[in-house]
Amino acid sequence: MLLRDVRPDDVDAYVRMRCDPVMMADLGGPLPVDGIAAKVERDVQSAAADTQWIKIIVPDGADPATVAGSVALWTHDLDDGPVSEIGWMVLPEFQGRGLARWAARALLRRAAADGRWGTVHAYPAVTNAASNGVCRSLGFTLLGETSVPFADRVIRSHHWVIDPRADLVD
Ligand SMILES: CC(C)(COP(=O)(O)OP(=O)(O)OC[C@H]1O[C@@H](n2cnc3c(N)ncnc32)[C@H](O)[C@@H]1OP(=O)(O)O)[C@@H](O)C(=O)NCCC(=O)NCCS
Image 1: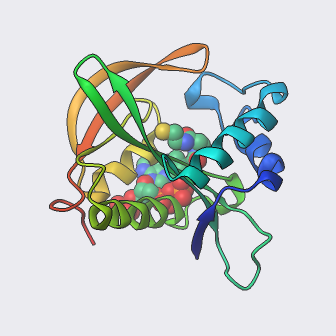
Image 2 (image 1 turned 180 degrees about the vertical axis):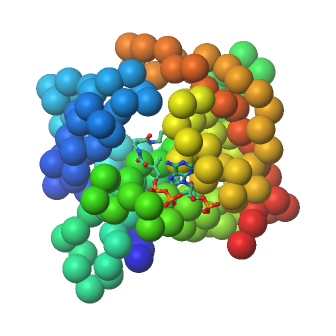
Image 3 (image 1 turned 60 degrees about the vertical axis):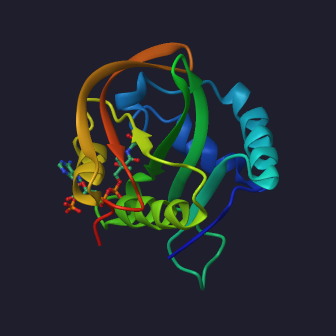
């Protein structure tokens, strides 16, 4: 397994992740295909500028064309200041193999070594057992429930936080 930066030719993988009703069931339903190419372009630019880490999960390094999902670490501004957030997606045919946990852990290890991200927050939907399982098994602490704006909707989420330098589980 490996992580690589998002590329312009990842539009198809983004569509399979973000425009599919099953993949997006806990995130308010599928996003329109229309906006995806522009989103990939923005993500490629952010990754190249190193302002966000937006990685594609490749399950087999010997087969680099096959994509299993994505994991991303970014910063956004809240009233109290900037917050680092992590999120992940794994396509249905690759789910249940520990890939989300592996990818999130790999990125958090890099974040710990890099030093700029501080504590990292995650906001999986309260209904998303697998994503909450990723947080729990990596050593995140559950702070409670909150409402999170996402695209044009609001997601009822669990709010988890981790200091990847201190709390990341093997
Ligand atoms: C959520 C998602 C990323 C999980 O990916 P995955 O690769 O199947 O997850 P993993 O195999 O790494 O499992 C992660 C943990 O959750 C647990 N888990 C997996 N599926 C579960 C389920 N249905 N119920 C409860 N726990 C579950 C696993 O046992 C594992 O915990 P462990 O390490 O303690 O054993 C994937 O299902 C997905 O992308 N779903 C659609 C998009 C999405 O919801 N993205 C997240 C937005 S916050």
